[in-house]
Length: 162
Ligand code: GDP
Ligand code: MG
Image (cartoon, rainbow, N blue to C red):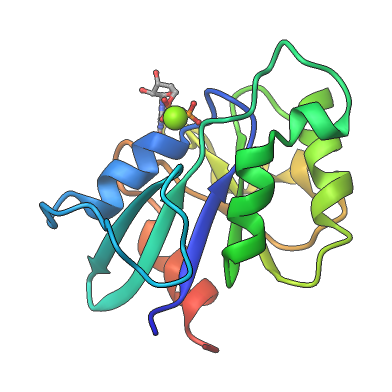
């Protein structure tokens, strides 16, 4: 079984952009993987030899409040079935309330979680990630999903021990 990597985070942080980058050399979306439900978007990935299933989530509605609503059902299920969670945040805006709410949930789960600061193109990487250590989850990985910066390094760190 390939590892399952879930992309979670508030709207507009770049989850779908990363999903598209990871899956673009593969034309088929994953339709039938045993144990995975179909209401989320799955893709099979071979990114520079790193193979896994990626799950995009879009179910977090930023207009809602509270952890149950922030972490919409779809995202909770995606986390549930994932081996690895990439918790995406926006390096251009810094930490906001929705990020903190998601972090409060993610901190309690017993999974490998990586904080991914996206949109670091044109920014100094060290400065861009500094704010997100306050989420209390651990190491923060700078990427630019739209351009590919940092993606290989992130995946190597996330997938190697599996
Ligand atoms: P999602 O709601 O988390 O799926 O976010 P999207 O993937 O739809 O991206 C939201 C916006 O952020 C879009 O306008 C993207 O073009 C932009 N975006 C995504 N990745 C990057 C990036 O690496 N750099 C910059 N500057 N913009 C990005
Ligand atoms: Mg999206």
